[in-house]
Amino acid sequence: METILEQQRRYHEEKERLMDLRDQINSDHRTRAMLDRYMEVSGNLRDSYEDKDGMRKDELNAISGPNEFAEFYNRLKQIKEFHRKHPNEICVPMSVEFDELIKARENPSEEAQNLVEFTDEEGYGRYLDLHDCFLKFINLKGADKIEYITYLSCFDQLFDISKDRKNAEYKKYLEMLLEYLQDYTDRVKPLLDQNELYGKVLGEFDKKWENGTFPGWPKETSSALTHAGAHLDLSAFSSWEELALLGSGQIEVCPHALGLKCGGTLEERAQRLFSTKGKSLESLDPSLFAKNPKAKGPKKDTERNKEIGFLEAQVYEYVEILGEQRQLTHENVQRKQARTGEEREEEEDEQLSESESEDDDNEIIYNPKNLPLGWDGKPIPYWLYKLHGLNINYNCEICGNYTYRGPKAFQRHFAEWRHAHGMRCLGIPNTAHFANVTQIEDAEEYEDSSGNVVNKKTYEDLKRQGLL
Image (cartoon, rainbow, N blue to C red; front, side, top):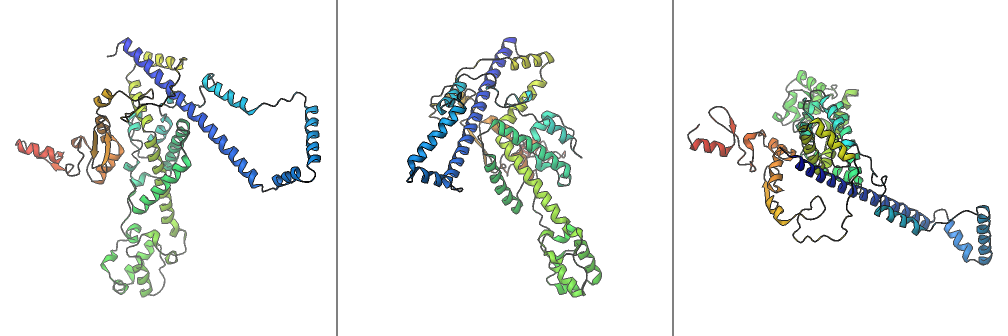
């Protein structure tokens, strides 16, 4: 149990962390505004030099032609006329504007300290606020009624949801979740180019989708007849002549199930049916289909599934980018649930109160050992680095030989989507019996005399002790 002094110390630390994060986000947004302005000015300058309207060429001819003095006095007259009509007009040098920007950065006002709008739950970019997405998820048909803290741990495990539940409502939920993640990322990481990120995700998704390796959407390997529900194995036939021996009854039923043309002689129908051997319904020649609306159904289903899969791919990418905020959100919700109502009110009052922060140290940080940075932006002490075991790397073969840095990250990964997906690909349940198992060979399933499923190492230990 924490003492009052320990709680106060922790609250002060949390306030300092929030203040540092606020400065970083505001600095990134100021940098983005300057970059946007720079790109706008560069575009205007490029258009001016291209001189598509010919105005620049006309002006150069006017000031360099034979009547340059007449042009000079004409412009001088226009300037005098302008100042006669506007005697109080003041020309502010550009340097003054940028001097004001520097002063505002060094001594920010209360308005300048809150450049971005965040909800109270988000803590100015420190936590995620997924309550609306959570309510949308638990109201989906067939969804498990879980708590919010459980949702934070598994909302990115979309590959565990069966394909028959991925309907139009599920797509709306994905769009809502993705819209929030994109908006939140734009607010906390304004320098991230989301257009470039979109192209990267699209390229990787297309490759995985074509190869059938995208999580949750395995490639269908069966023939078109299997998709349509017509139970006829064409692999047993080597030619359409053999297929014709079945007679007109069976050959007429199967094309009808596929939506193919059913007319013509027995030989023509056998040839059309045999041409579907080893092919999916989407890869068939459109000319083989009968002219009815149902013929386009499977193609529409495939396009819809691909759209849903691409939404999932984007969610995976944004969750990877916001991994730190997600972990802090989970810890924050867990901490709030353990507090009393009075403690929550005191924390909200402290977060709303103003606090002073020290100026950031702009000097280059000396970090020869490449240590991780702490909450203050400086390398953590080397003894703390070794105490947490961050110098030790753990490799997990089930996760595709992914390397985890430190025992804490290694233990946490067993409950994350990458390890769960690897176990699912191996056909093994991700239960407590397989905790700390990283090798595929050790993940083999064994059943003891009581019917309990254990891994190979546990089974061998029980066998040596004669407990089976």
